[in-house]
Image (cartoon, rainbow over all chains, first blue to last red; front, side, top):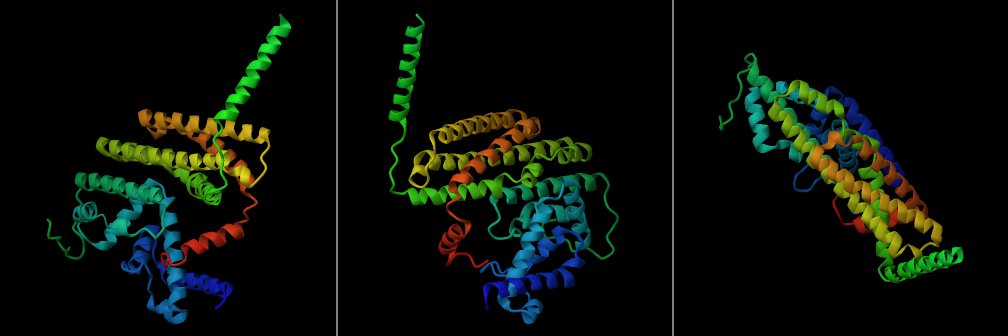
Length: 160
Length: 194
């Protein structure tokens, strides 16, 4: 496979991924978390069965990596207000009690593992800082006005 | 009397030139290629990683501060200001490091690769000196007043840094992107898969 044809395949795979999967996720934060979850922590390689069967393992991996970097960039340039909205949206989708969610994110810092490989440390630190502030803002908001009980019975984390 | 002043001025001028010649760091060709690649890397880091308007704009975004002031308690506001200050100080540090790396190359090794006229060398030295001074002033200002008290000087620093980068780019232009990419690709081979 020549470099040019591989590049075109990666572009096509990225388009396919955006159209069939990522377009259903409203915010860059959702896309970032989803794409990070397709990455193997031991190898740093991305896996997506559907994409790999339509293209190839290697092309799918590069397309996922491209989309991951793109989602990171979109989140990086989002204003703090926008990040708070995105985080609140993600939290509501998780159907976990907001204060439990905030406590878990504060303690485990899951956002630390969602950055793409080779991201500049300063940019990653900036995003982490924004997420920490967003968590603090949401916490103060939920402490002031406790939310209505979620529709499904929430799973209580063992820490609380 | 006039001629005495003139002779004294010429004498002082010659003395300054002699001092400059003595103090000028000896330049050896060994290690110059490595310095050249470092300079190229520093230039790329500055232009693509540290100075883009989008990045600097996010670090100093006033709408973030306004949002926090309007929507968060005082403790969160303090945390926000502390974290932004920490990030902006780290950013200034990185800019300073890359500028120092570029400066080292220009005054230590560049003459092995390109002919730089004395006038250009003086102009570049002036720009580097100004930039380092502004970097230091910005660091102090951010340290004592926070990032939102230093937006103007940050803009000034970015403008001077962009000018220095443009001047450096001209003198490093002989190393074509294709060549430098090949070098980078070679060194990256066997590295991280993604």
